[in-house]
Image (cartoon, rainbow, N blue to C red; front, side, top):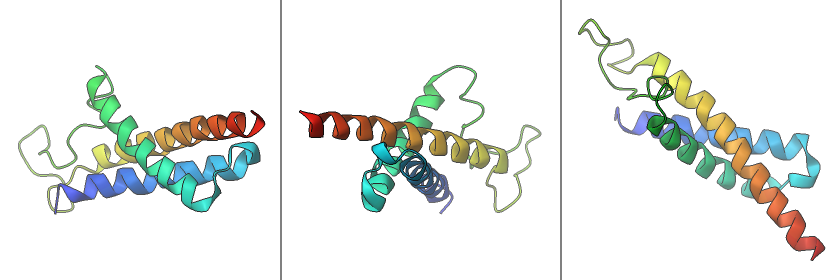
Length: 111
């Protein structure tokens, strides 16, 4: 169960980021389903990419790891800070991928 929670956070935050971008910038809107799918994929991809970048890997690190002093974090061993970092990264990544997909869709429609 602890492995699923971070993935759900990334998917939901990414979907939310995609829908926010779609509503704010109407020319990039892919529709509610398209925004959600592109955002969810972007949320997963951005969080994975952030784990590979030195400095950001600690922000979005393993959400189920124990605290530095050897005790487990609150909420059944889940690290709230890492989950929050994954949520923010997912939100931004979802918005970015939705914007990229919207630009591609707009340019294809003009061609």
